[in-house]
Image 1 (tube, rainbow, N blue to C red):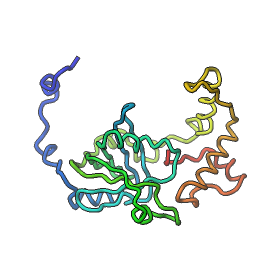
Image 2: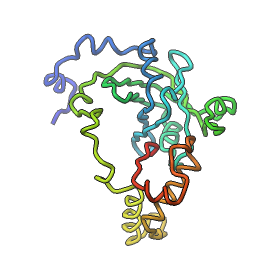
Image 3: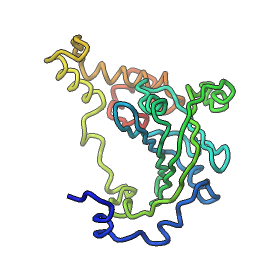
Length: 237
């Protein structure tokens, strides 16, 4: 087993000068351009109960650049787990990975975060009349682009490699199986969860998507469409 930095470097060697030089303590013009084009960012945080990675998606540029060392990330209505926000209150360190569809390079940003509920700031992120619930303010400590090897090797942006939605259970089926499993044993609170059918769960999920998400146009609006589009993937969760 590897148990020291020296042993690790003996295998890998030292990083190339370019790999070191690309890391800076602020967002230069190129890195800012990547933030503005990204509709998806993975937020990593650490809390009292462990680590967490949370995907956040919206229209490109939804993460606002306040200045070269400060980012503002709005939090929209969701499932109310708020794992990231809970973690930030325990430990302000966060790491962001900005992903741009079709582009192999990603942007990695490390720093610290605070949570703002300032009314004017929340309202400035309003979409379709719905302000953000809170805004994560990230102070940049390190930023660097990551090369495209992962996406080249995975061929992730090639539509021919995309997996059909039917290859995996729907969100409703996931919940159904979890509920069925929990009904056979007592939950940690001592209460048993009631089982529910997949169709009911799917319907509930689609209603939630329509009423809670900022973009209601993206989701079905009638009962028939809820059924016919039950396999539609959603990027919020």
